[in-house]
Structure formats: C-alpha cells, structure tokens
Length: 334
Ligand code: COA
Image: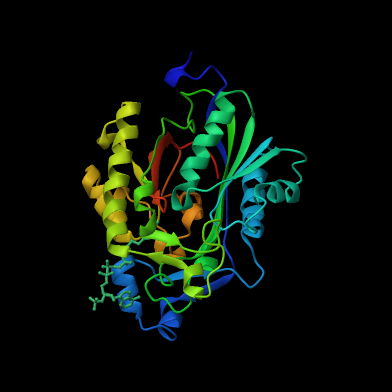
C-alpha cells in the first residue's frame, strides 16, 4: 500500500481544470437601481463587486458542459464517470450529469449528481476519489455547476446581492498518493437540524406547491450562517491538516467556498493562516454555490496565484448544513 492506504495507481490525481461563466455581468450599481441596497453596503459586507447571471434559458447543464469541455481538453482524454455537484439541476428529475456526459461525447460513462449545495464540489471530489480508489472508474470528470440565481426572490435584498451563476470542473485520474495533484484526506460533515437556516420551503416532495411564491425561493438566516461557516471551515481544514500531518505553516493557499470575503478572512484567522494565503475571486463572481471552489482554482491557476508545488487546502460550507475539506499539492495543470 502507498501513502494514505491507496494501492499504487488508485489515488485520485488532479489533471485537468476548466471554468465557465455566463456572459452577463451584473454589478452592484445595477442591483442598487432596483433594490433597497447600495454598492457600498454590498462591497463592505460581502466583498462582492459584481456577479455573472445566466441568460434566460441558459442552464446548469449548459455551464457544466462548457467547464467540463475545457477541463477535458487540457488532458487530451475522456472520462469514464461524471460527477456533477449541483443543487440547481435542469430538472427536478432526472439528474443532470447524464445530459452533461452525453453532450461531452462521453458515450455511456457513469453519470450522477451530488447535492450538498455549496459544499457539493468537495463532496463530489470525495465521491470521485472513492470511485478511483475502488477501481470503479479510471478518470472522473468532477463538475461544480449552479444557476443558483434561479432560486432567488428577485425582490429579496438579503440574497440577490450575494449569489451568482457559473461552473468549474476538474479531471481526476488514477495515480500515486505521493505525486503532485493527489487529493489528500477528506473531512465531510452535516448538521440537518439546522437545515432551515438556508432553505427553499416548497417544490419538493413534502410541500409540493405553495400559492406564496416566496416559498419557492431561498430563505437565509445570514448572520447565523456566517457564524457557522467561519467555525466549520476552520475546524474542518484543521482536521484534514492533522490527518495529512501538515502544519498550518505548510499551507501556501487557502481556497475556501467564496460565500463572503469576511467569512474567508475569519476562517483563515481561526486557522492561524496569514491573510495573503486566502484565495478570493468573490469580488468578480459572488457566491456561485457548487461552482465556487473550482472557479476560484481556475482563476488562481490562470493568474499564478497558485503555482505548481503550492500546498493548497480546499474547504467549503453550505446549506444542509454541510461542510468539508481536502488538500493537495498543486500539480502542473492549466
Ligand atoms: N443592502 C442594505 N442593507 C441590507 C442589505 C442590503 N443588501 N441586506 C441586509 N441589510 C440590512 C439589514 O436589514 C440590517 O439592517 P438593520 O440593522 O436596520 O436591521 C443590516 O443591513 C445588517 O444586516 P445583517 O444581516 O446583520 O448584516 P451582516 O453583517 O450579517 O451581513 C450578510 C449580512 C448576508 C452579508 C452576512 O450575514 C453573510 O454573508 N452571511 C452568510 C451568507 C452566506 O454565506 N450564505 C451562503 C452560505 S453557503
């Protein structure tokens, strides 16, 4: 057995990276023109200046296909499984991943969705690592994609400024646990008692339809979510560092779910990381839910904020509640 107990060739190694954003940019000034808010409030409370919004008819599958295509192109090969992290699938039934696989020309590849909302990408990476370690798949396309703005009440100033749409993707291949790009240990958790801190009441099997349209939109208790996100992302990051035997001082980059710049700063501080370890693109994309971490990785790799050899911690927190983390040494990938 090799490091971390994976048989040789059965660790999940990151080998491709892709991103896709809708064309339409909506800045804070545009929102302030139709909601009781201001650019100053949004920037100082969240760190967001603008976000991308899907065009009418532009869907999660569309964005996932674009990000997935870019990630696969970088590797020059296909994938035998697609794991799509999303909470805004194109339809309630079926899952969207099979449509993504079909549009990418991946034949009859295994394909399914994972819904852990904003933590979904970390959960999907863990699932893919399991498929590779178990010898079930050799190359897995892992995509985080959401048109999260489809869940927002357009009149709600407490949610509209925060979220945006997008997709990010990575390809994982079987490799060795001690090579750059190998995903490290995972730490995954949930706390369903607190589901109603971030929740869409109607449209599911319990409450199928409500006459009050607001029941079909996201409701968020922002301050409570803020507190839990800071504590859980720090705690979970520390858990994977301990499992991997890394010291906090070994970490070069901290890639947290882009929910709020202040959450990222507080979580990093709880961990004992310097502010310049925090990777942030939230100013340009807002909170893109499951797409958040791969989009931040793609941006950071493109502008060399993350370079090969950097030791990187990935951590996320989201509705459910759910949270989780993993880590890797950044490989030579673009
Ligand atoms: N523009 C102007 N004022 C706003 C506003 C907006 N868009 N949204 C809320 N306010 C007001 C509130 O009504 C409140 O007014 P009051 O003091 O008169 O009651 C005031 O601003 C402060 O609101 P509060 O909710 O306490 O602010 P906050 O500092 O907690 O920031 C969030 C609000 C939503 C930015 C913050 O709580 C947050 O980021 N929470 C986490 C959200 C999140 O990450 N969700 C996804 C998790 S995956």
